[in-house]
Image 1 (cartoon, one colour):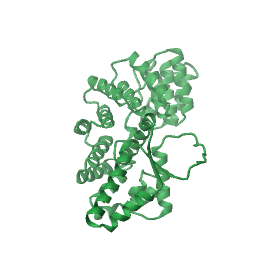
Image 2 (cartoon, one colour; image 1 turned 60 degrees about the vertical axis):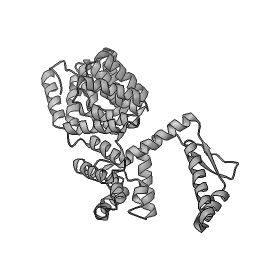
Image 3 (cartoon, rainbow, N blue to C red; image 1 turned 135 degrees about the vertical axis):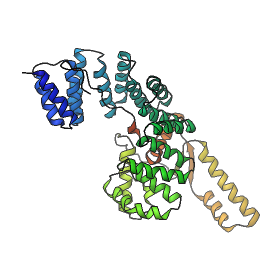
Image 4 (cartoon, rainbow, N blue to C red; image 1 turned 30 degrees about the vertical axis):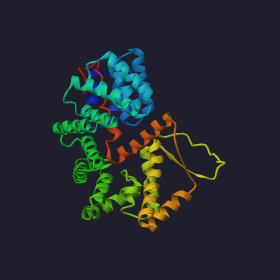
Length: 378
């Protein structure tokens, strides 16, 4: 059996997008010989075919033969991050950079998983390592901007997005990041133009249509709003893109469609978790949980302002507000520090999905292993 010919056929099939044929050729090779390089390339194909469990076993088989093998560690970590097994993915990236500290993609992907673990400072340092090795690494620039945005270093985040766009003007996640920052900083017209540009560059981007709809509504641009309404309703109906219910309410009053949009938004934005326990509360008071003392201050400030208007002008509307705020049985309390961190991150994740940079920009593509039968599969 000519293993070199089989290998070349597998590489050609992969390049042509014929994954099933590539998988067959690799299986023929592995039936005769199982070098780590072939196992990694085979695992890459299995992962692309969405056969994740089989892919993981193939990576493990390669690493059992050659512990610390860079391509095995790197690609296995990519798959683990995709599966949401972040601690394991980080450990894999650590082993990958220990084996090859000169590969920018390994540092970039390490930063991506650190950011998903809500460690933006460490993520930023990792992206900086990638950029020190490859200053023009577009993904690392985008991910650096995302980490800076998480750290509320907005100007630096936008500068990173601009640097990425200077290198790749249609980089969708750079456009997403910049449009999110423009929206959050009140540059509504600019945000609308950037979301339109994002939608043109990446029509299927999950946040493009929602961001454009939100910006158009804020700008009172009813012409654009009318133009995008059919696409927005279809996206909400079929779940083809993220459409936030609060945005959709400006375009539609169908309760069933609003619920459908809410379900899709939750599925896209909230990590899977075990069902919450059913608890019967002993109290009969409404509880509004504030992330910190700001909610309490706001409640008091609004009540005092209304009281002042009553005292000065006999404002009947304000008097109603004061009575409502005094009579409503509401208890406002703060969460403990640990829960505050989690709740704030969940809120920020929602903002990022709505108008910020999407999490999926993080990882670079797989690194093909050097083949025993040829120089490399690229």
